[in-house]
Image 1 (cartoon, helix red, strand yellow):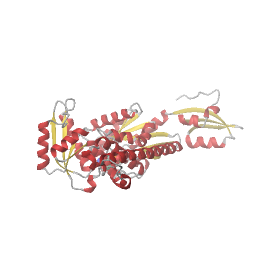
Image 2 (tube, rainbow, N blue to C red):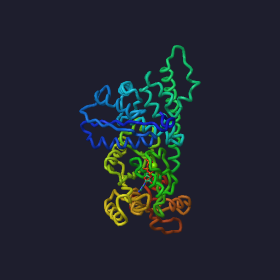
Image 3 (spheres, protein in one colour):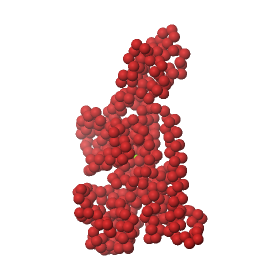
Image 4 (cartoon, protein in one colour):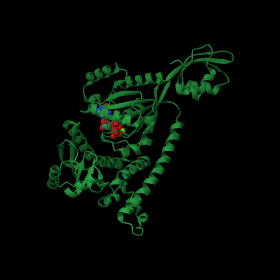
Length: 440
Ligand SMILES: Nc1nc2c(ncn2[C@@H]2O[C@H](COP(=O)(O)OP(=O)(O)OP(=O)(O)O)[C@@H](O)[C@H]2O)c(=O)[nH]1
Ligand SMILES: [Mg+2]
């Protein structure tokens, strides 16, 4: 579906539908976002149409009269394509294409196209292509075969020699067979990538893990760079980040955490993408704490927060400890006002206000992160034989030494250490008998 790279000046007409339960205002906002997506996919928006209706039409999605109006508007605006804000069934797409004599696609196809244009690493490319082909497969009818040669950034196109027609095979059957084979190969590659990622996660050890989550363009990568110095891509663009990057960050002299930046979320995230990006989102699933980054300057930031929450619920991590990071406060006030935002948020346990771009509020954020790390720790009184040199040096590296006293054979130490390290270093064997154990 890389039409945008072939003809950069394509024109599109956008169509939305508001049904009961969705206010016109929400549908308008959603159409604004579709315009932004279309723009990101380098397609020019020449018009938009919004219909309020009691229910979705089985044939055309919008009403029949409106569909005819759409056909006229497509002609008068010289639109090369019509983009629906909602997912259309393969039949609705076909009916609309026949009526309007124009290519008809939906929001999912545009998002998949952006992902495909932005995928830079092999992992992202495999995940996107798999999602595209799974999206394409049920839409592959006689009428849609032209897509099979465009999908996956040319991956299918590049399979010319494998596409030799078997006896009695139609073009459609060839396309289906090719796609099925390609899906299988990509799935196998993705499984391999997934297990490699799991191995490198294991090698990183048991440090406290934090994942940045949030709506696309909220400023996750900017915050990643501000906290860790990692040279991640920052763009005023939807879905700039498609991979995950993990860095070790020193929060204070005795606390190191692992921070992960990853792909952003959006309303109506295509479920094929969701399934394909499972490996990338694994870091989020395994985190001890989520930083939910919110773009406070966005007029509908609350709707975006709700969307993020429901995506987290779909991932099964809605109950994870979450710190809300209200970002871009420099956009909603000057110096003094910014300080007020920072102070007001600081009083709430699970909230901070920051400007990731200007570094405002980051000290409070670090302090709160520290608080979560400490919650995850225990204080132990240990009696460690002096001969355990390796363990003693590990403790000095990984734990906070509160007190230390030497006896002829042992070192008596009071330490605060991440719970995960108690088991990893098998510390129970050194817990001094008369001392309190494992209290938080
Ligand atoms: N004014 C202002 N702009 C910010 C701030 N933080 C990020 N931005 C801008 O917001 C845009 C998006 O930032 P990113 O860090 O790329 O956002 P992201 O959440 O990683 O976005 P995706 O990876 O695309 O999902 C960029 O143009 C940033 O410069 C901030 O605190 N203030
Ligand atoms: Mg990013």
